[in-house]
Length: 288
Image (cartoon, rainbow, N blue to C red; front, side, top):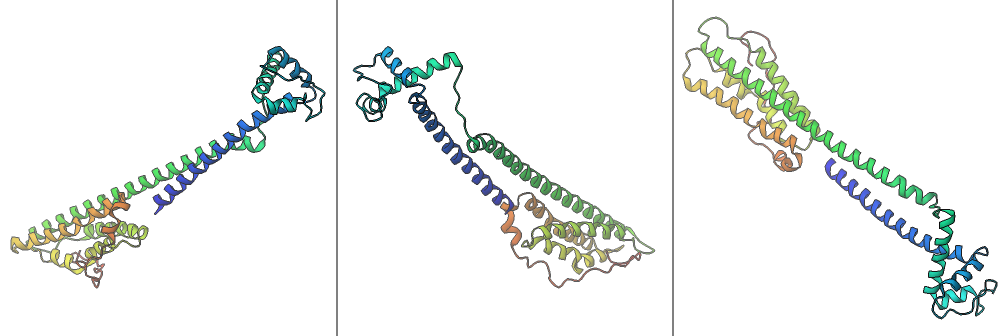
């Protein structure tokens, strides 16, 4: 869900940036053109525009008067309407001549345009950087969580197999202590609880937790004693492997939650919902 929201936010920012920059580009072209007309028809430049038109001698120019009022046959305004290309050429030449002596002419962009052309790219870049950094941090956090879950699974497997070996070889005296297996189970259960808290609609982490805390796993390990048939020992090992095999898909789903979300939501009938927690006794022969 977080990745989808980030994707939608990224798309919105990009679209807004494109629209605003396109609108800004259109206004710049219109401002420059209108500014040229205002400059050439200003009272200070009207006589110079007439002189420029005479020098360039546009084809078939009407008689021009710098002082003729707008609408008069010989006014500059009438000339602009009747022969727009000639007016534009003369006006551009006048502006070019002025720039030669006074330096390049620049138009003031205004505060709104300045904000859009300067601040908008900066804000857009900052937002994109934040979105990518957030996605990277989330991906790294998921990877770290999956690594920790796999490490807890390996430690539980190591402690369980060691306890099974020691129980099978103990021909006399009290049974080996199960403290190491209890600690490994608590660590693995805690990681599963953390994942379940992050993904409240996932059923698989809770199902595996119930298997770890259920009586079936503890009974299979407790059945292993010195002199029991090898099938009993293998049954205990198989039970441990069956439980731990279910941990790896959870680790994969943590790394790729969008792809594995449906599998993690699936209800698990193999995990008894009424399984009770193991006794927490620390005696030498207590259940693991």
